[in-house]
Each structure stands twice: as C-alpha cells, then as structure tokens.
Image 1: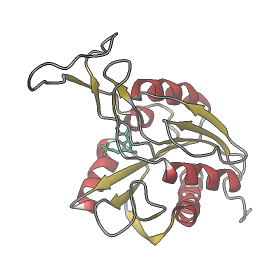
Image 2: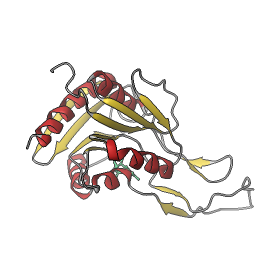
Image 3: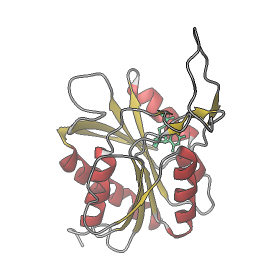
Image 4: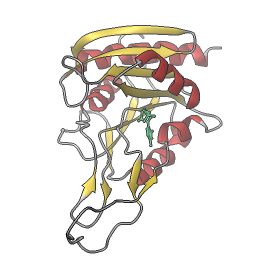
Length: 222
Ligand code: C5P
C-alpha cells in the first residue's frame, strides 16, 4: 500500500515544550513551537497510522484524524507516554522535554528579595530512553537539535538512548529549527544516513514518515 505505508500501525508522537513550575504563576520552559511534532502526527495519520499525539502547551490546532492528550510537565508527559507503550508500534519523541525541573514548587507566589537568587534543579526522566529500554520495545525515533558537531552528537544519542533512528537539525543557522515553519534534517540510523533538504515542515514530515515506515517494516520483517 504505497499511499498509506503505515496502515494499521499504532504510533505515538510527543510534541511541543514542557513547562516546569516554580510557583503558581511562573515556570521554566523553552522555545519549542510543536510544529515539527504536529506535522509528523498529521503526516503519520495521512499515512494510515492510528496516531496519539501527546502534546505540551502549544498554540496549534489538533490535526484531523488523531487523538490528542495534553500534558504540561515532563513528569506528566513521561507518565502519559509510558501508559501508551503497551499498545504502540512506533514512538516518535519530537517533544523538547525540559531536562530539569525546579526541585521544589512553591505553593504561593515567590516574593522578590534584595539581591541575587538561585533555583535548585532536579533532573527529569529521559522519556525516549525509557521507551527504548522497554522489552519488547516499539520502533523508536528521537530528535536532536545541535549547535555544533551535529553527526557526532546525534549518533552518540542514537547509541546512548538505544534508538532505531534519530532526526537531527542545526540550531542557530539560517532559517529552520525552533518556531520556524521550515526545517532541514539529517537522519541517522545504525549503519546509514539520509539528508532531508530545507523545506516546509509539512513536506519534511511526509519525507521523514516515509523513511520511518521503510525502516519500521524492514525491522519487523527480519
Ligand atoms: O539528549 P537530548 O535532550 O538532546 O535528546 C533529544 C531527544 O530525547 C528528543 O527525542 C527528546 O524528545 C528526547 N528527550 C526525552 N526526555 C528528556 C529529554 C529528551 O524524551 N527528558
């Protein structure tokens, strides 16, 4: 089925940033818009997959034909994703998960003092690594955004996190990346690579979904 290469596959995508609260009005987060993850979820649904989109706080409409679960923190996203993994064939970790959260969430608004202040941070769980450590595990795709040495860092994460594929993009170069409508990707898997040229995220998502479908089927037929 060439038009619907993921027909029947159960696919979970995480997208967007997470928010880590400091107090009832403040949080730590990042510049992720969720556009790449949403484009992948939409492309996967068009490719025939049964898609669940686990989304951090973003300002995007839900693409047609999929289920969306909204979360706020990395801990919430971890719990929501892990709860879906018993019935998933493919996991795409496109979320920009906060690596750290404030060690304590103040129950009331923090008041300013007279000088400098320090926030103690605790490390968050690595969602994509925890998914890839499951036995049996789904086909796992991670992302990497790098400012330097793209292939080395991306391949390092592919191996360290036991991923089946990683999609890497440069940040801080021309357009593309966080919050842009366009992006380019270097895709790596054990023993191979592909280069997807700068284009609209919707077109890029379609190309990446085609690549994921090929490798997913190749893995399942060996
Ligand atoms: O190590 P780094 O954060 O660069 O790896 C990026 C990949 O790991 C992305 O796929 C991201 O969604 C995932 N990740 C995660 N949980 C974290 C941090 C990153 O799933 N706590």
